[in-house]
Length: 466
Image (tube, rainbow, N blue to C red; front, side):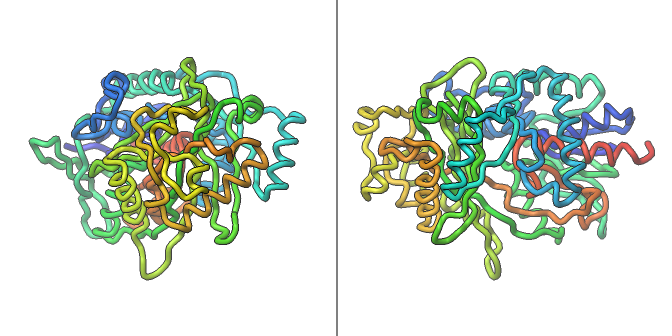
């Protein structure tokens, strides 16, 4: 097969690359390779079975058109201060301008016009004062909340738009390798499980998301594509009653807090807060179960969940941060018999495991019904665990009750975007014709920033003569 542009992965970066090419009037032939299903065919069986059935060959929550975005909480962060390090590559002003532009596209396809966390009220100032006293930084970031169910509708509309404009999307096809000739990328090798073939293109855009970060890291190492190990995030998802988070949920919707707790002073942050949300499970390759959180527009729970992530940086001789995080996840899964592990915060401080009967008697009931009560401290590294404990105590000064005995901690929460592909401001790698976008590239984190990177890529490719 032959195309002008081949895009590997139909997550936000890949989608918005194709979308921007169309919107700028380009007539380049675009082929997208996606190993999952169209968004309208993606179904999580857990909704009906009550437990994860480990869908094969790929988890429907993390794989398919729009990637993990379709089943995420659907939050769009509208500030260039949030979402990774893309501003350091192309400039903060350009990123913020592109966020505003990309936000309008989401609105065109049906996103809610309401923006959360835009108030500069006395309540916000009080939250900030408490954060400063606790040694934490409160990051200002307006949020457009699509909601899990609405996000699926929006991405379904975008999918139909791309198909109507002659973008060829090969679902249930997997990229196995890059086709390199010298220092130039000529396309990709693809399989549908029955037949192997090549797709040749002038430009190859790899946008495989967090799910494909490990694969991209191996491809970079195998072909000598310039990259470096970056930061890996290891942590937990915390769940409390909505009453505890009531003020923050009302005035900010999502409190983005950053701290550097003693004694290690590693960066620790909150991420992906879901008022009235539900804790969820995602399955990655090799049946690795990781925890996440969803927030629906209409369906609400009595709890709020939020991730607490510790950033770990490694230097020589170690250069496999993704593998490191996977091993921690595998150990946690082992303790939970392939499920997500949950423990009460007070039990951690008391040095004991949590039992199912104790969860049944608590004010905070797990919204992940098949999570296994146990001891997450038996799997998480000492450094990560102490960072989390001290950070939770600091957050308790901002949100009283956050560090209560019954607060639930789920593990493992892992973010696989540690491989940092070296690129210039034009999003070109060390291999001519090859571009790496989104969370798998190590430059973005989250829906909006990944989408922005796709828009910038689409503009650059469109600027070349058809």
